[in-house]
Length: 289
Image (cartoon, rainbow, N blue to C red; front, side, top):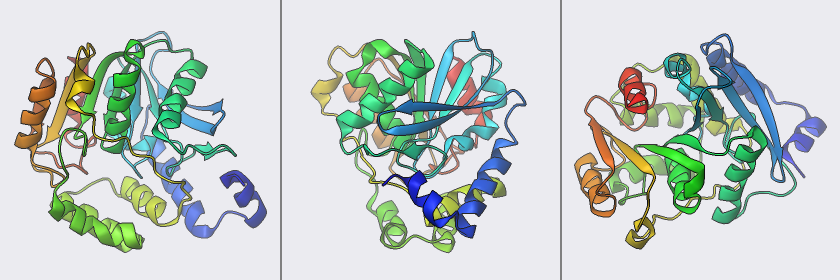
């Protein structure tokens, strides 16, 4: 039974209703021309929030797990001056994408879903940017569908070029075992060194992780070095200098080993969970260059 069928039968719980209310509050921070686009594929209905000139070059944004497409609120005003921005709610994750009867249960199906979304949007090739889990998907997609990606930007991709920190995983364990709002907020405060993030977006993250329905998370494996042989997509890897997911300098070295032509940038003022919101101006400048 699909998520939407379940909701129709039992109604929307107050906590889930609060999540959607928070989602819409963050979306109100987006440009006035923002459009909600629902794309149908065999895996369900994918929600894309789009803004910018319809004839502009396409920039597709994939968020981190639990962040939803709304997380780009601090970036899209500037980005939409140059690009037609398509920010995606990941299928199976929290947000307004609704899984269908045919759930995504493999990396191949996950990447085929991305292709299907691009096809339905009429996009032949795009600039592709992902953060965290979204960066893992973006990298896996570009490696297997090089002709569909003009440029690739990976924001602090966890486990794509090296192992995640045991310390980070230890702090994340309570959320993985039994997520709730309090634990999610405490985890983000720890990882961001108590950065003052947008309270509406924090509501989206905390309420979504605790209450919104999801399906099984399909995680692409770390690519083997041979996968990068003859990889021709212009790639930028942005690393959070103060992040706790991994050691930025070590990941930068690993990137240079397998992708010597890639541009790497370490943002000293960023942590994994402040991106892409802070520092938004620096992230945007990287996407412009």
